[in-house]
Length: 332
Image 1 (spheres, rainbow, N blue to C red):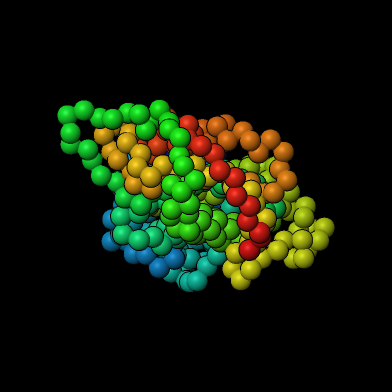
Image 2: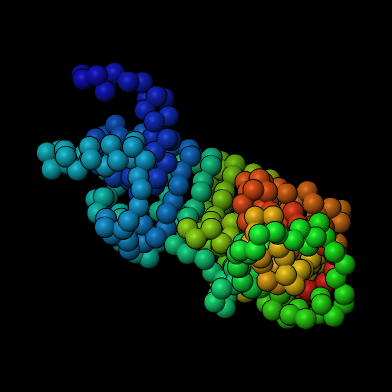
């Protein structure tokens, strides 16, 4: 027995939880029989779909020191190891495609926290425009916060006008101007969110121990979140009503009839000196949801990680001071 074999299993599992990356953990399973059994007991995982679904080793990425250690360990001794009993060859596991997230994680039995990273964003915008959104789901959409703008420029003048940051009255004509574009941004974000929600359907049904699921993209465009209560609601609806209880359109979940609180600034000058054209903040909730006037709490929670310091965080806090316009939209 060497020194590594003397390390208790719980300690090894804790180390593997720090690794997190599913691709690395799958490779760790080929190191030994012990690794094969312990790697699948990790409960905090990061699944990068672009890496596993057809990406190569040459993909540019920054590995954590622990992940790099296990990768080098595997490469150095893999050729010297006998064929241990395991479900499949590692190269086959990583190369067979297409695969759903549920298929990739089928042998991970104790997932509690899962973060899925997609290759890129879903919303196609005109050049210069940007959108950032966060949606929460259960059986269907619970809420979505969207911030978008047509373009961003840096103000090089000596003084920065802050009156727009402090708020200002917007005329009806100013709000109507460009409304079609803002609605398209909103619909595009909701469709992207519902597509990601549908992609996770089998994963949510099969891993009943999960407490939190986050689906984001590498570009930072949008995030879908499901907590333990939301996933339980999804499973109970599916078990009770089957596919009839979980409406879908093509490869996405149906977006229910919603009530949108929209705030808009034709030109929003931030304290940082950045000017956002057609800056828009939209808070979306299903129609009939109680307390739908409390946008501040939902927006603050959605962009809490920004702390109000970065461009998006500063923009949403400024837009919350603008006039609130309420729109209704049918399910789609």
